[in-house]
Image 1 (cartoon, rainbow over the protein chains, first blue to last red):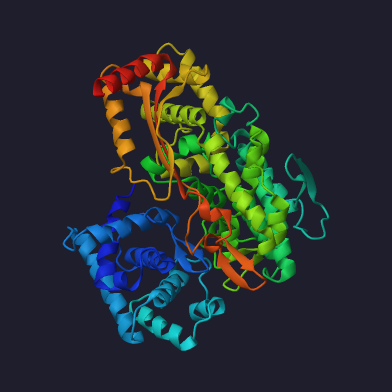
Image 2: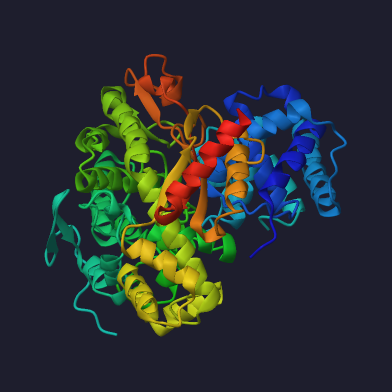
Length: 167
Length: 434
């Protein structure tokens, strides 16, 4: 059995929300907050390499883990009541650092980081690595489903390719 | 291996009809029939849909076999509707969806939800993963290959990672074909009439919104609300009924002890054991009836450990866990097991009782059931006025908005034979505390 611990989602995702200024951007009771939490958890597993034991399905809004429905409220409470110096172990700190580097590169490429960008980033990665069958052209596959501009998706795609995904 | 003929779904030529108590005649295509005839699928005839609920509802003896046929049938109805509306592009895909629906429960353990938590917690495997292993490593794979269907497409839909999100939603979402079938089938067999749903209204008003999500036309909103209400009632009256949970917990305990003390290929203890079970074909015997036979033999054997024997006796003669304290309640938030005061109280009582009772005579059952989730990924959409797609939970006039979001089940049980003694102990403690 794997050694994942879903409880560790709380400090890891809280730190990411704070460091990336997403906690201020999205009200904890909003629908956007739930999308942000889903995508950050997905990226922490995929980019950060931290295994929370979450399984993600492919839905119209990108990767989605049913188990996370139990954590939206807890993450919000954690955000409100925990300090920023919550102890993180070495693997968690490394994973956070990888995700932040990656998302900061995305932010530099696109000028901002918001829920739409997170959804597009996570969706492209999932299309390239978890969806079956892997589409020949993930960019067009995403464009087919979303009313996004091609230029926007291509810019994200370039960053992702730079990280060795979707190559 | 040779199979009789290639698939001819839409000509209906060569189809077999099976009479189903819920849906009437269900047509099976050639490929479906070949799959149904495998020992892997026939196994589902011996796995009851509601595990041990027949201890409370004598009619609840229906099986995963009939449920699987029903889900495939419903998937066909909806997928053909969607194909006619242009949301599904080929009739080949209708067949693929029906196959995924037919096979979605192929990996259930004996007594399904009573035993599965042990595999999830101790082995890290659930029935979806076992389904994948069976489909990809048995004659089912050969049949799918022969008829020209990619087995990995079927497993991807079952696991919710197929490239078409709509296909994943049809099999797994708040209003999926699995739930539609089991709600109506379970209501019928238990006799819990408030669990019945208006299936045809839901099916006929299902559409796809502009974002590719499953949605329902506003004229179907009453049927959708009823679906949620029916589900809530079924959770309380059937799936989490105090006695049903007691017997399923008991069965889970017995199975855990079997795995600890006995070695048998039909008691797999790892993913590799399960793979071996599939490869040998013995998995066809891994079902409710096998387990009942196994525990009856142990009960008759003089050398069986006393505690295990007591639990088996309690199960066989309906003297199982009886609820001592029930602190279940509705809530709008997920249950925090570590912080919840009721759970803490139940644990304290259980600890007190363990001074005079053996741990196998007591059982704590805690669960957190989602009734409605406000989540943009999965909450069903309603098409208002033929245009705007809105989340059901955002519609002010919908009764769903007023429903509690969660049902927290928090109970302490004791075996029937020590129940009165345990109750006296609790009452004495309460008086002393007061």
